[in-house]
Amino acid sequence: MSESRSPLFEAFAKEGIVRRDLLLETLRERGIQEDDPRLKQFIKSLNGGSQEISESQFQILADQNPTLMKQISEDDLIVPDFKSFIQEISAIFDEVNQIRLGKLPTYIPQLERVDPDKFAVAVCTIDGQRFATGDSEDYFCVQSCSKPITYCLALEEQGEEIVHSYVGREPSGKTFNELTLNAKGLPHNPMINAGAIMCGALIKKGGAPSDRFDYVMEKWKQAAGGQKIGFNNAVYLSERQTADRNFALGYFMREKKAFPLDSELLDVLEFYFQCCSIETTTKSMAIIAATLANGGICPLTGNQIFRPDHVKNCLSLMLSCGMYDFSGEFAFSVGIPAKSGVSGAIMLAIPGVGGITVWSPLLDELGNSVRGVEFCKRLVSRFRFHTFDNMLGQGDNRIDPRRCKK
Ligand code: GLU
Image 1 (tube, rainbow, N blue to C red):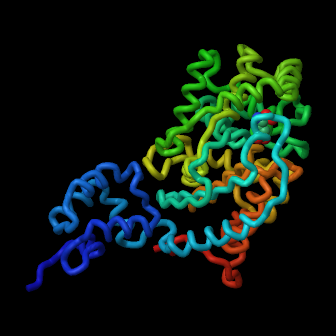
Image 2: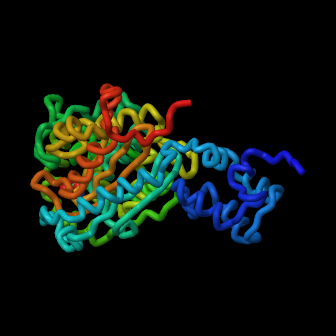
Image 3: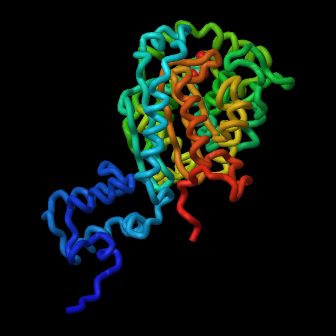
């Protein structure tokens, strides 16, 4: 008896039948998780149905997300061998986990109270393949990792020309909160405090502070594929109370007439403290990083959150200015657009591949997570993820996990 079956069914079937548990295992192996918003209806129907799925039942299921099912069946996800990829990531995690160096930041009291041993790594590819290890569901405040998002939101609203008439795009060569402006009396770039305070002033100008905050939270949530985004009020209060330097930066910029005309300095500063106090998990931040790596489209929803040209601008500045005073060294030796925060997070966006977030609170003297930086170094010692690795061609033995171009 020879029946002609659909290739999609064949790809998932064994002896003429698809088994629910094996189907779920295949998805998991490819990095597609059961809580993936793209598969909401699919998983619901699957769980409500029988263990053995006939071709016609399977077709109804697969039709709910034909593109993703086809990608899975044809090994056409950006990292086809996801299993080997995450084995390497886990190996790096285990090596780096041995490191116990660094200090908690003391200048924001709440940050000093975090468990210093926490450590998590999470990955999300541009096709929504996900993996996480360690304390990846713990919430932490994003601190300076908010800066790329604030910058993108300012660009979305005002466009490049206006935004960059208020903030430069040169590395400052100074610490992130240094009391300094460029020769035009403007912040050097959006990745340091002065620049992020300025970008915040350009978002929903003149709107009520509550509406502006709601708007930013909603954008964070969208970029994270609908994952819950939190807010740490204690960090916010603590930050506001110890913010002399940021107040000084604000007054300095006001004295230089750097702000847009109708800005209320106190509102602008409060907004900046609130953005730093947004809380997320390593898992969710990896999705946000993947949205950046995917030209502004969230891999888990397919929604365009930021314009691709704005993301290009943002990644350029993350590469040149995202790692405090280590930015030049990091761009040279790691070569991945990244943003670091004093809560110990590093958000990496590997263009066209995906996002990776590392979180470990102990910091080096420049304010970057010790384990985070070490993880990044080891990542590029194994994988061809440096932005300019394609220069190396044949002689490079490191892994390139991306699917081969068809
Ligand atoms: N809220 C911190 C500050 O303004 C951000 C520091 C950081 O993560 O770089 O000082």
